[in-house]
Image 1 (cartoon, rainbow, N blue to C red):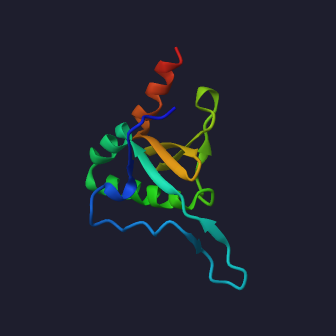
Image 2 (cartoon, helix red, strand yellow):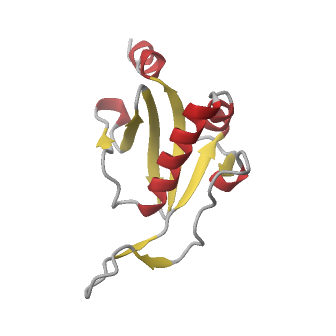
Length: 127
């Protein structure tokens, strides 16, 4: 279960590209366009703090990942987690990882961290 406090992605650092409105949008201009629903991306309180703590270049890269998540399930590079985190996913950008789960029409981002710290909490919780 994720935290009760969630923040929409659009609430973070203005000046970055904005998300498209929630609707079905074509992603291919060919004869048979492929349509994907637009998911709402929400951040838990912890993920929001982690995102704000990132340096500007890393923040921009992670923000672009979060924008890509609006196109779930048409997102390349996402890997399903296993064990006690079954039902959760992770995606990476360089040395940073973003952990999320899907709840209805929302992608809930739970954790954003450098790979050195990303897996430590999971190992300690499993002991």
